Image (cartoon, rainbow, N blue to C red; front, side, top):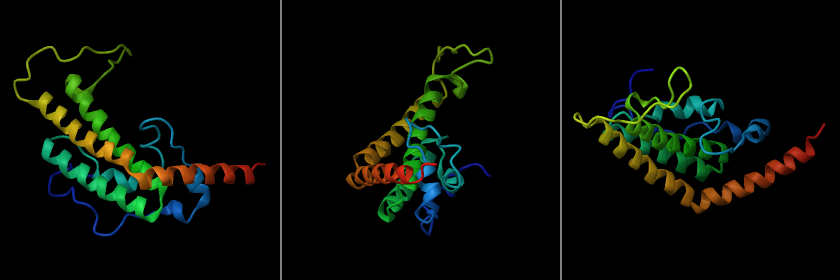
Length: 172
């Protein structure tokens, strides 16, 4: 996949596929989990949404967060909790990954020995640390909007109830 640029980070022309709407097994195999857990492993949503996620520079983060927000809203409107929640996770991951780069030079929190690496100690001469902090804040605003979406909260509650019923009726 080519590097994300401001030019290629635009919301999709057509709504992304919503496979969980047609496949109950896929829909209810999804785990909301904590934070971003599962965001890079739950297919096919990972592959659908990942191309719109980037945070390298502030302009790229702005475009990415806006594209992801449009995708989130589209999934919510269509009643696809899985797509909406996966998109929320990508938005949250934009916030946390950018913040990690702001806090740790090179974005690495742990060394090869598993020990936590130190935070930045030298001055931010080239402004990279500040840029990553700004990118994190851009995603943070969109992440908060996701959590504040009444339609999303309602969809999440409905999906949780439906999943319980589905699992109850599919016990072996």
